[in-house]
Length: 532
Image (cartoon, one colour):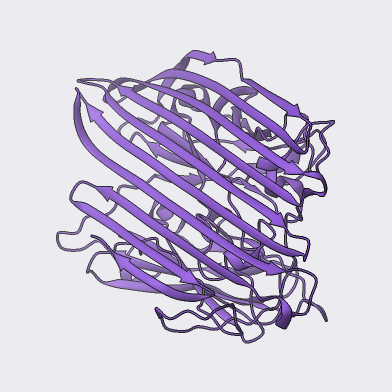
């Protein structure tokens, strides 16, 4: 199957939700929309700063200087990033980032446009980056784009930060004391590495990696890769197995499963995504690693080598971007915090790929990897031991016909993590159970009609307990389903495209419930309902 569809240039425009959908896609339909919740904010004094307002026509980054808002002080309860975009004409989906002081605050992608133009909106809670926003900082933003006689879409964006002041009974948010980036960061083979120097009194260290398979190549669709000698357009020795690994001074420090993000031209069928994008497509969430067991080693005042690699990528092949932020919490009552790594148990990464030829070729794959690290710190409030255990598992079944006229996948990834912090009194245990899933098939009929059916899932169950008592919990379930078809290789007016899509986003927690469903048919929004 042709994995990334070319820009179609079909018309899009905003319109009100309606229950009466046309029989096929016309020349206007609803602007992109997602079912996720807006960022909750307090009713306090707020200040808004424009961080970037520009147009992207090529691969030249936009650069400016950010200055914090004076009227809202420097202690905030919430900081919200908002991105508003517009594009008209013909254009591919594009990937982009926004960095403030070198800190990656947003990784995003764009919807595919129409001749008349579309607009879209993204908002994100960036309170955790407050330490990087208290002083003037350089700004860099890029949504790499190509504009010529064929691809005419100029991407216009405006990015703002809104600061909500901590006042009255509204307290400042508990945020990291420092937000760091890697010095001299560079690509090193298939890895990305740089030097990290943390304050000598660091008592918690968390790395976050915005790992994305880049557009336009096989690593954008890594979950479909097959080994030799299978006859398929994307090859990899280990098949579809991918794992994002972080190392400290050459020692494996964290493992994680990447989310199988699908951009808005993916699975050969942009009609799936014109109104509802796939989960995380507009707001790529970083993978997080608790590196606190290594804090005693990092606290010596010297630079340490941090490396990020995506296991499973064929040697010498590019296709992944893995920028790193490091969040640090400091011990306010100690100038130096000492400690040591006491346990490092790297279970052998197991897996297998089996190819079976036939009328329908078949590749089945499975993988499993576990890592446990533990270390202690001598803090001002006593010795604290942090143990991080993480286990990844993946299974997939990929079946296709010759010439990839039928191409299907069923896959599931799990990422289970437990972080135990033990000091004075009962230990605190944080658990995370993450499940990512994808099931779909693309077929091409003799009349060149391409049809795609796809379901994607993004689930997470987070819990914090102490002495057997549950302190807090949250449960996320974001599910997308779509079915769309059109005739390929004909003028726009003869494509006779049809498509339906649905997203249900549920987020539950103590005293909180958010449950919203969106549905579309032929580009019209046919349902926008809430159950909470």
